[in-house]
Amino acid sequence: MKRTERQIVLPLLAAVLAAAAVMTLVLTWQLTFWQDTFDFLISRRDITWDTVFTPHNEHIIVFPTLIEQAIMRIFGLGDAHPEYILLVVFLIAAALLVFDYVRRRTGYWAALFATILILCLGPAWEVLLWPFEIGFIGSILFGVATLLALERDSRRRDLAACAFLILAMGFSSLGIPFAVGAAVDVVQKRRTRGWGRAYLVVVPVALFALWYLGWGHEAESHMTLHNVLASPPFVLESVAVAAGSLFGFATSSASGEIVPLWGALILVGVVAGVVHVQRRHPGYLPTLWPVVAAALANWFLTAFNAEPGRDPTSSRYQYAGAIFIVLVLANLLPKLEWTRRRLIAVAAIVLLAAAPNLVFLKEKRDNLKVETVITKADLAAIQISRRTVDPEFRLGPEIAGTPSLINVTAAGWLGAEDEYGSPAYSEAELAAAPPPGPHWADVVLSQALPIQTVVKVGGYDAHGGGENCITVAANSPPLGEVPVHPGQTRVEVPPGPEAQLSLRRFATGEFPVALAPAPGNSAVVLRVPRDESPRPWYLHVAAEQSVRVCR
View (cartoon, rainbow, N blue to C red):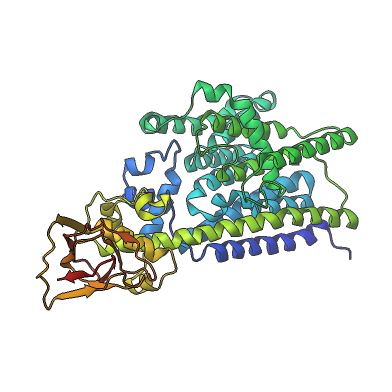
């Protein structure tokens, strides 16, 4: 018996979803918490009205906050594996709903190909590799569920749509466009079903309005008249970039940056293709208008709140943009008869689109691996310095080596560690960690303890010295060093050129901590506080004259 399209595609879909889940877990298994996640871990550890309802930037994040608090209480912060497993669950669930939406309109094969493109959307790497973005994914997941529930006219489906819309709007403000889409559906069906079902939009919007009146209005807003007036070109560029991302033409192979021109060319091709199909097979589904309304609301609201770092090429915007394009096309394109030749041609196009996107995704994962090394090292340094570190000490980029830890303060992190554990390196792991982890750990330690120096010009004593002194020969080797232990160490520099002093502790082959230069005929008192590690520091002296180092 000849197998049906359904019998062929569903096993392939299962294989694609399993492969995507394994790929995401393999790519992320060695990663740790990153960037905005630390707002959850430090500032939102307790379940209070404020921690749950306070916006992050301008976004509502009620359900992501509750999820993160549950993860902390159940699994602790020893590693980020539970977060990444949950990320995979959300990504697969969203892909399944997109598949179902497209399948109902254009058939199984088109739905499978669309799902593959979404799961391999490398330019949306922030969403695919960062659990914090389950806020965006959750809004997409339950937003698409809302659209699916609205397809059948029944009171039960309207109740489900209302519940899904509440969830979509509670995960992030990306739920608002789906409320717009649902409102369009209510208006479309008002003659056949009346206005009584308007509650499915009114209730979620009213809950969102209550949140806004209580907490959301305090969030910083970037909506300006300039942004509103400049929104049309912003929206057009956003659609173009999302189209380029979906079909593998978003990024430059040389620079790795997103190039809007490629997306614009792809968008022109897509529009031309749709026009051609509409001429041969005129007509579209009535469900087109709720999706178009939701898509335009998404892009225009993004444009209204534009600021540096939130331009059309931003990674996190590519996921929603690509999905909206897929949903719109599903309402415009007819079902096809899938001949073998047509299948081979479309499969080749999908593979050619997915391949560069997966390369881009792997490159961004490699960047996150470096961030993971720095994060684990810097957090370890905070924990080692807990005896003396200022509670308000903050891991700014000039100290931490990365801007992704700007939300971390010493008191906040040490409180989280005491309560839920830590993914930071142990002392032994830090000593063996790959670069640049030990480098930045030494820099953080020097500032967190802190290590202090006092320069006494004219303090050199030609008759000084003793059994606790070591003489460092002039022009000592580049890696020459003297162990330095907690307490005071005196560096005596005879008359002559100034001496350069630097330290290392966990770093090897370099001295990351540069101290103030020591002038000729001076003594420098180096004060090193005691901390949680017995490991000594190592002092390097670069001078044209012999220098004494004394305990």
